[in-house]
Amino acid sequence: MADTDWADWQRSWDRQQEWYMPDREERFRVMLDMVEALVGPKPRVLDLACGTGSITDRLLRRFPEAVSTGVDLDPALLAIARGTFEGDGRVSFVTADLKDPAWTAALPYDTYDAVLTATALHWLHSGPLTTLYGQVAGLVREGGVFMNADHMIDTATPRINAAERAQRHARMDREKAEGVLDWADWWALAAKDPVLAEPTARRYEIYGEHADGDMPAPGWHADTLRAAGFGEARPVWCSPSDTLLLAVK
Ligand SMILES: C[S@@+](CC[C@H](N)C(=O)[O-])C[C@H]1O[C@@H](n2cnc3c(N)ncnc32)[C@H](O)[C@@H]1O
Image 1 (cartoon, rainbow, N blue to C red):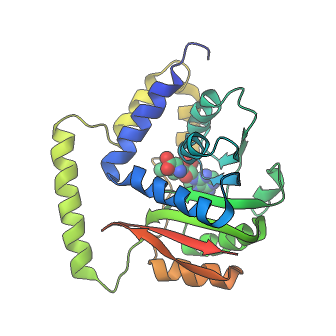
Image 2 (cartoon, rainbow, N blue to C red):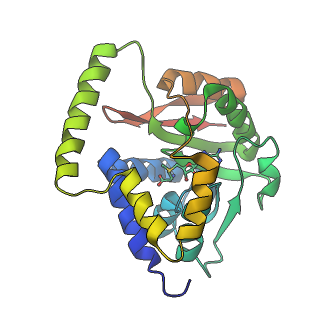
């Protein structure tokens, strides 16, 4: 493990994710602005479906006194996360399936100031996501926050959606022709890496390419979070394709 360049894997993960979401860093910045605004600069954070720990990385760069728990099920992405933050006492990682009714029992803390997630919950269908939102409401302290940055589709605007999608895919096609790695290309690289090959094989047994889920509209997320016990919920940022939804307990 000692020879693996974790920073290099982080960079290539970021480039691959940015191909889908060019505004990804802006989304993280606004997320952390809202963390600071609502719970201050020393938060205890749950990085939900953390992947390689992208949110945790931005969090600790900006708020060195924060602490973070990352939770995910993917053994390869967690290997990169654990390698990156090895020896950092502010960070711990938990392997858990967010669809497991008992997943919160594996966490090191009972409550968090902020539960943050990005580009992940569209892997769940709306039934399991409703259950998850109920569990998240139980983890966020009174006055704490939950934020979900993800692709959220409002089916009431089909012409806008189709135009946005066509333009986004045209850009992606151009960049792909210039050599950008997509999801499948990136995983093909991981499968060839001496350290990541084994956890990559396991993640394909767990997920296949990736799990199927839903992308409900921002209003659905806000309503479901309020029904789960949050006092307020609304978008605090959006791009043509993505929304950052903030809920306050
Ligand atoms: C596209 S990645 C995003 C990772 C990270 N949040 C980021 O922005 O780079 C989606 C993540 O959701 C995780 N995930 C999806 N379904 C999950 C589940 N049921 N339990 C735990 N993690 C899950 C995947 O393993 C993956 O790491």
